[in-house]
Length: 119
Image (cartoon, rainbow, N blue to C red):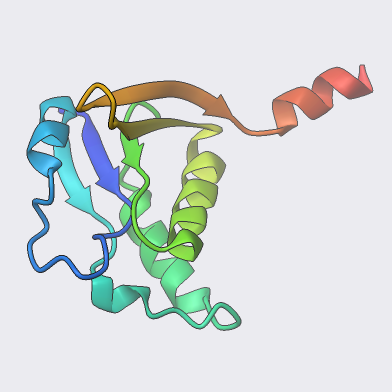
């Protein structure tokens, strides 16, 4: 199975979802979790959005990548759901100086560190 690149949010104001995603496609199949219209989120009523994101991300695997883009609230929700599902997250980010995407692997949940503190 091919690794997927989960794009948190299509950047606001972009009419096309390929705003430099061609280079991200070299890391796996690109899946956009939220379109711009989905991002108009009432932060006090985020249950529906959280559920919609969960329904999409439950198809993810621990080796998939998350490309963090767009509005911060949906991005934070995507990170939270992904880490809850897999205990870690692999982030794909744009290195502007090198003009390419790079991976940061295995950001883990804090539980790993809390266990160490309690021992």
